[in-house]
Length: 98
Image 1 (cartoon, rainbow, N blue to C red):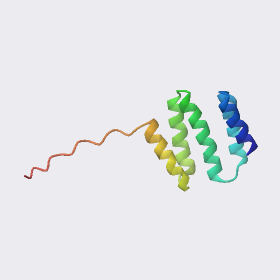
Image 2: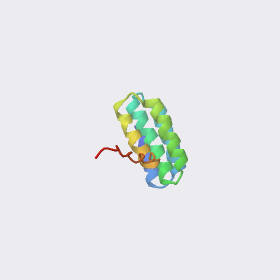
Image 3: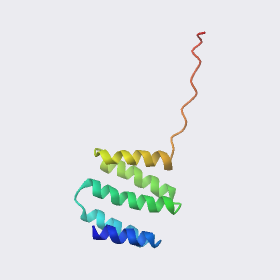
Image 4: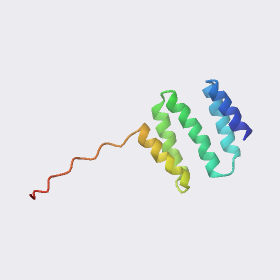
């Protein structure tokens, strides 16, 4: 928890590279998948806020593979839909009936 707290403080100070290192350190020390996922979210949020959209998308997709079965991973799909929205559905075809 201390490594995550340091990462959050560094992020608050816009020391993003250092914050990412601390979040990685925290991720490696946590045991629960939910805690590890939270560290990945911190890193993805830094990438997104820094305009590194491709890195954020890659991080989200990697995390989907890594954490797919846990309920908290549903948030990954939500974030991915925001960062990289799916194409709009094709228009409905007329049925030909009146």
